[in-house]
Length: 336
Ligand SMILES: Nc1ncnc2c1ncn2[C@@H]1O[C@H](COP(=O)(O)OP(=O)(O)OP(=O)(O)O)[C@@H](O)[C@H]1O
Ligand SMILES: [Mg+2]
Image 1 (cartoon, protein in one colour):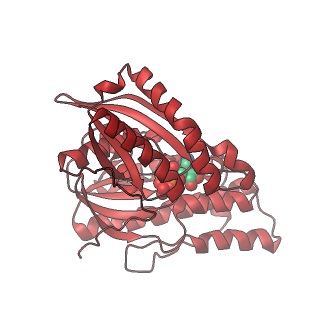
Image 2 (cartoon, helix red, strand yellow):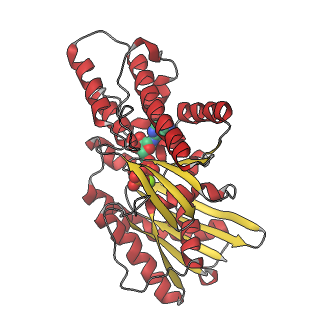
């Protein structure tokens, strides 16, 4: 089965062709058109610019993805599209485009939740047994899920304010490093010494599986405003370490509470090297299976949308031309 995945929830337009067969899965093409250069002067995403840029590139990007995959549009069996969560104006572009293709080709259309797609990106590399705990850490989300099957995500905990990626971006902004902040902080942190600066580990004394990152950002702000001398790379290392420790400890607790040993970490922040190395160590010391998708499938892409759409289709979840978009996901809570 050839699945065309379409993603336009935020500031990346992405199209991918994924083939799912009896022998497994292959990503025939996965193209991402980033809008970062257009948003950078504003230090964050401007929704109006985002929607317009999606409109400008989506058609050409789709043609290029088909060409690279050596697939005719008429050979596509299923359309998979992100219809939430995200920026409504941006989502509408991808969803309208996918609807038009589904109608024209007379093929099924599967709606995909972007957060679920992050969580399932690991399947692009290897199959994982269910159930598992999924930690999604991205620009807009930081949440822990119990994943019982590809289409069943139960929320265990989530951030009460900023997402981890958002905290990286805000800290980078207040240090005048640029946008997006994650990769910039990560690069500087490599030569920094985390132990030189003391930062809080928010929510670790709270018994639930929720997170909070705005206090950490404020601690960085207070340090910058205090006029105390510090090295930027030490601060980057300290901030990155604090984020990693909180994410690891809450994930460890989630696994323990659910009596599971399998963890999948995904979303843009999962591209972070320190996070990957810290979790690898945790896996070794605690006898856990911890999986990270390859970094290109951690940040936004449409291959993850295609695979998530395939699973939705297999579960009977298809949409008609009335398919709407949504800004926020509503996941059922575990244990209910
Ligand atoms: N190496 C890295 N270290 C830390 N953070 C990173 C790294 N690479 C990317 N990020 C962060 O990941 C985020 C982008 O991830 P992603 O593309 O998954 O988010 P999004 O799609 O904007 O948000 P969401 O998926 O929640 O809708 C940004 O906040 C960015 O700073
Ligand atoms: Mg994302």
